[in-house]
Length: 342
Image 1 (cartoon, rainbow, N blue to C red):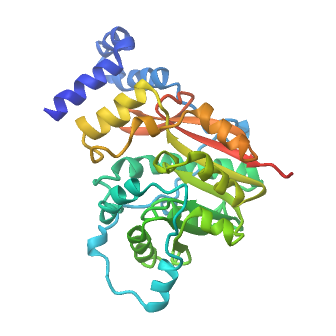
Image 2: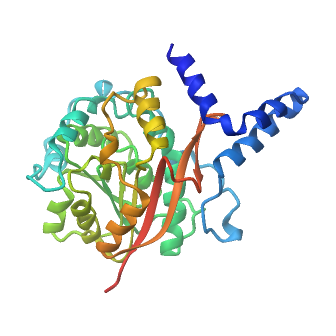
Image 3: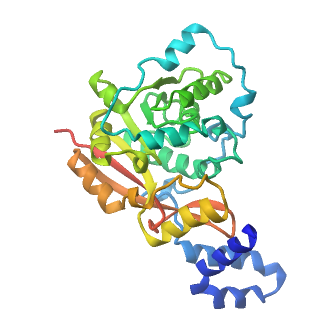
C-alpha cells in the first residue's frame, strides 16, 4: 500500500511534465537514460554550487573519507568508556533556556540509539549529508580563501556543529581538517557521538558537549563557522536561538542554517510523504506551524548582525533517489551568512 501511494505521489508531483516525460520514454531504449537526466534537470532546476567561479566548477575527485559511511548502530558500540572521556562528553548539563523545546528534546531522545543506522529514522539526513557537505565545503572555502580540492580543505578553522545529534556532520567536518565542537541538548546523543568518534583517529579529537548554544555564549566561546542544520525548526524561540548562533561567530565569520520551508509543497513532501506514506521518519517529527521560510530566516539573521549571502534549495530527485542543490527552495533550503564586523 505504501509503495502504491508513493508512486501516486510521484505521479502527482510530476504532473506538469507528464506528457513530455511519457513521449520521451517512447524513444529508443538506449536513449532513455539521457532523457531522464534531461527531464530531471528541467524539473528541479538543479545547479552546481552557486556563485562558484567557473574555474572551480569542475568536480573534485571523490574522497571517501569526507563522507560518513554506514556504521553499526549505537547498540553494537562498546559501552565501556573511560572516565576522562565521560567527563568530556557530559560536562555542563543543559540549563533551562528560552530556545529549548522540552517536547522536541523528549521526541528525539526516544530515537537517539538510531543515529548511525542509515536505514533508520535518520535515513533522510544520511541521504542529504553528501549534498550538505559539498555545499558547506564549497562555501567555507570561498569564504575563508581555502582550496576546496586539498586533502584537508577546512584545516585551521574552528567550527561548531550546533544540534550535532550523533555526529553524522561533525565527523566528516573533522576529516576535512576542521577543529570541531559538537553540542546537543540531549545527553544520549552526545554519548553516542563520542563513542562513535572514538573509533576513528581522525575524529577522536572532536569536542562533544551536552550543552546549549546559550551556555557557550556565557563562556564567551567563538568559532570561525557556526553550523546548525535541521535544528531551528525544533527550538522554542528561533529568533533567540539565531542570536546565540551569531554571538558564537567571530566577526567576519560564517554561519550556515538549514531547515524545511513552510509551504504546502513541503507539507506534502516532508510531513505527509516522509512521515505518513514512506514512513522514513516517525509521525510527528515535524510540526508544519513551526517551520520557517527563507524570508523569515533572512530577517532573523539580519537582526542578529548576520548578512545573508546566499540561500540554496535542496530537493530530492525521485528519478535518481539523490538530493541535489537547486534554485527551488520550496521544500528544503540552506542559508549562508557573514557576521558583520561592527
